[in-house]
Length: 113
Image (cartoon, rainbow, N blue to C red; front, side, top):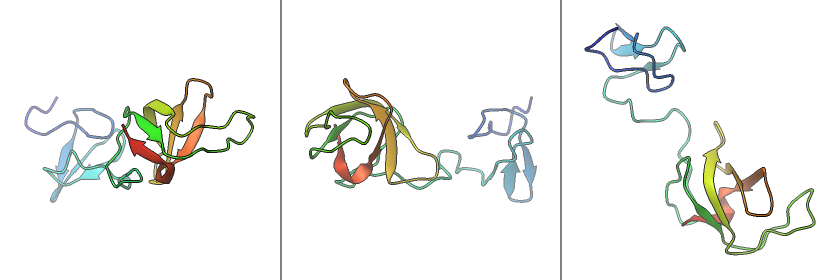
């Protein structure tokens, strides 16, 4: 284990090594600049008001939405807890409401609770 270099921010392994000005993880091949471990590679996900969203956040639906494959609409004010971000897509999140499971929602119809 390397005690002086940080663990990989992507996979968490501690076998990182320097390669020029970057740090490299041999397990997942992730490369990053020292000091930028907290930055994500994907786009920043924001709600309809411009607030940043993160995995595990709670959001509220801002208008009634029809749900494909369901006869139950998603009403304004519905709370979606413990959201998951879609990799590489800043416009969509995944989550569950109390009545409908497995939702993929556009962030433009959500606000952070």
